[in-house]
Image (tube, rainbow, N blue to C red):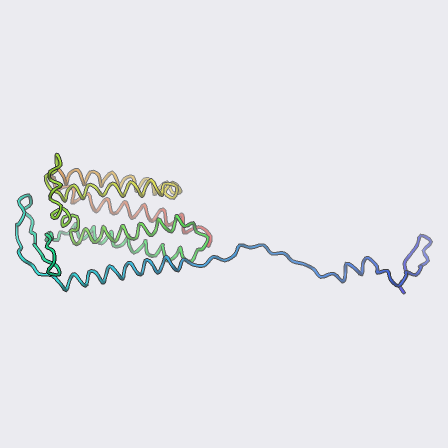
Length: 260
């Protein structure tokens, strides 16, 4: 039996079935509540998709490189003095392939675009370590990765020239003298789509907006001079690539600086 104090100062006994309040609080376990967000798994499917796409590209390129026959080579098309090859693949279809001479400025542009692809791949890899990063930011990095890879391949392999040589019906359009010039000019369309779709990401960096705006302006100028036949477009293409790299780095610095 426990005792309790009364006003007179003399303790009085408590009934056996009564437990003191202090003892109740002392016997109850302490509960700690920790609120945290569940850990998000890295985008394994996304990485697997990128790897599968790259592997498919390599395999298709290897298959084409082992199953072709050059039928003719030289100045085969009336609208260009450049060297063109007529090649038959898999003994099934024949296409024209541009054999453009390699210039120093083309090499510089290819190196710059390859650098952009490498930076984009690094940004994608770093975004995987940041599960809280918005999916749109990761999508922006992936678009830049594949875009830079294509542009680097185009600059080194003359892809848009080859496409133009096999789409000669484009010369029926008014003002078009070379179909490859129109294809090169059409690159502005996906560039504008990327700017519109990811405008919220680009607005996060004032420097990125300035660099991308300069890149588009220079690219439009290069496309115009290419269509009219002025050789200054070869000087503008490396400048446009450099502005794209600077803009992408500005975006990556802002987005990857967020806490993981």
